[in-house]
Image (cartoon, rainbow over the protein chains, first blue to last red):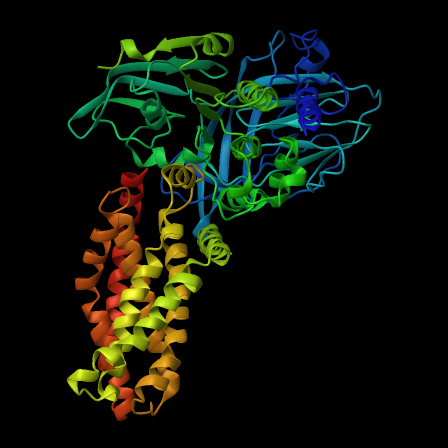
Length: 413
Length: 224
């Protein structure tokens, strides 16, 4: 089984770094040798006439915070199919010298079909970040289609917040979150995901901010006056002895543990506010106790996660295969080793692609192969502009993985 | 189907799958419920009580006690990690409550349906003039017991005294359910109108449903 897992991990890595073929455009896909956008590309412009993003919003009662149920559609000079409803028009310009990672301002007007047939018109201003420009090997303009999601075909999966443009030789992706993958063999298909998660209209920057946060369990203070800032693309390690409040800190960041004092924001939502509940689906947590149901099989456990998260069960099966448990899916969780149970937990995160990944002693008790899956998860989260908070007793491990390590023992009472 | 109902169905399906594998209700609760129905006639032998007169009270008492056991069964208890996972998956707390109540109601109905023939076999009560309305009474009673016990289970989640405290919360509030169900059945036997007692059941169920919906969010917050 180990060799199989290694193959899967290697496959994941290849997908993230492949120089051609299946390419992930979520940061990792950006070729180092093309750090600055080519002049030819810079002339490409996706104006209202070329690009139309259609979204349908579920009424949430709050401006700027919606459940998107239908993704975006894009139009280039090539024929496309139209899917969805509503209209949102904005102009986006690439300036000469635009660098990868640079924000691109977009202004326009929006007309949204809102549930209950309400129509809103309002000015739009989105900031997109240029994260990928890739020169295609095909000299001829390639057909770009929208719609359909046949995973067997070469595909480009674009989140609803992304924008795609093309000058016929280059594919340009502006993105605000999530993943985009593209495969080209002379034919590219854009598939728009149906996304059922809330988003903020501006990419939260930073992802986590805690300001003088304190937590008490009854009369017992657990955290006192803690400050924390986690920026997109970073991994923050939290070290500390038993009882220092590491897991409690993760609970706070996951918006699950109420604050006794202080304030903070996670993914743009203020802790303790109703919005905090809405960002929870964008948070993934892996702890030392997997959240599995003993009487269900490993596959049924993962299907349960997929059903509740609004994902396709095929994605659950694919994730199970990726962690090397494709053949063991029929085993009950109670009859599986702890390592297998932990892998299922990791598979659920691979499937969900959380924007904020919380790892609670995630490496403890795992073999090298499962360890590598965590590394892939961390890399995936970073590349899609998310962030990772990992807690561990193992300071050496944290120093290896994290950009910054916070000694919690010094901050808690 | 809306996301709410998908989530509720997923939770109910999860509970029923777990029950199907663990057989906690079928292999433990139901046998004890049938044993209770069987034992009571021996206990009342010396009291010179006519069994037919206590048949239905015994039935509802068994339904109350073992229905509560079904809803509070060990395999229905979610661990902290599982509760956190449900919250982070964006599971609507009301959908979660709805799903858990639905699965518990199905299992309570199993207990009621299995013990009903035994009551007629051992106690020989008067026949029910109109058996079909009885089905509705059973469903209303099972739904009420499921909601009440699920609420009590959620309120006592994480407490060391859960197993003793939860039944203490259930029993007093179950009085209108017991009264409504027992009197509805009595009215069906006597051929009288059941409307007031069915309404009692319906109003109690609605009140419990409202309580469940209103407290689901805060209970989730306190339990994660």
